[in-house]
Length: 215
Image (cartoon, rainbow, N blue to C red; front, side, top):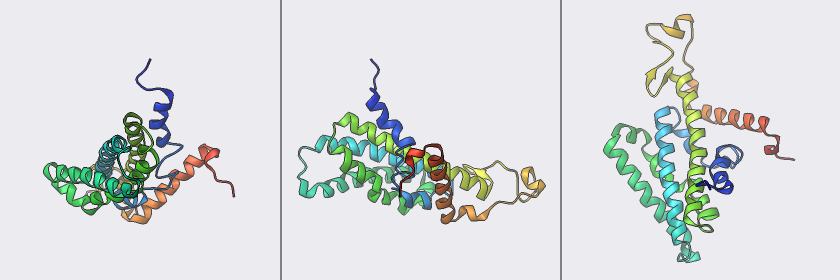
């Protein structure tokens, strides 16, 4: 028998596509707009949310039977805040320049709707293992969208990926720039992130008609 049952596997795979927290549930949009101008920042934010949601779900699940219902939101905020502080300190210790780029947005993980939503909807009602898988699945779904958006915004806006030039040198006019290509500066602005997310939503719904809402 495999490590994961079909239900366990769905906890990880569903948020990657048909139940994606950003494109289907429309949660966590703020960070998708704010920090995806660079692919590196998108990847680090994705890993940060993976850590916080994965372990946060497990902690809340372990405590679910002893948390008084009247203060459950306060307890959840305390758990996620402690995990975010760990992430913030690790970034400052090992990637200080990147931590300055992400700055306040790491702290805002505390109020990320995806995290609080999974605590409420899943971790409070399920065991630690399933809660861990749910946290991993939803954070991966979140991260996939951030990385896709960051990839296109940095590539088309700056001509680089992870800071390395991939389209040529815009000053020396090498690579694509030698035939007249110019970087699209609009891709570095937050509204373009919303447009890219909108395109992803359109592609998802075009491929799966079941996701199209009836009016």
